[in-house]
Image (cartoon, rainbow, N blue to C red; front, side, top):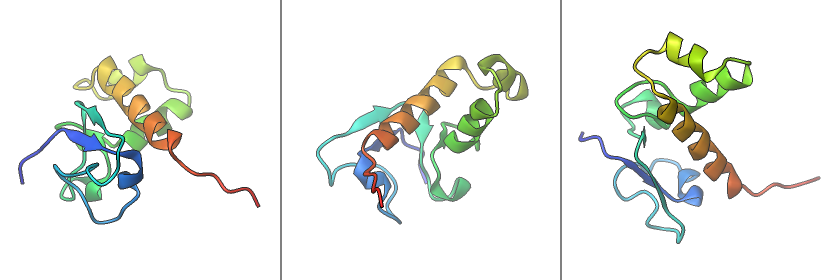
Length: 103
């Protein structure tokens, strides 16, 4: 399967079982993430840094655990600052459209 840049709409990401080049066409708002990709054959389709098996979630967990960008790059020398910033932007955009229910 050919790797493609990740084009997603926030609501589309919540739909299960749909990946690939048509992601995002079902909803109006789309944003392109050049450094993030989703492929069902890589890490079960979770969003990853392009050409790696490092998930956006993994990057965010390292940051939330107190690691600096420099420490993450030291652990993963093939990553760049832009990769980490892209992971943060992807997560922020995904959460921006989340609906929160208060009980």
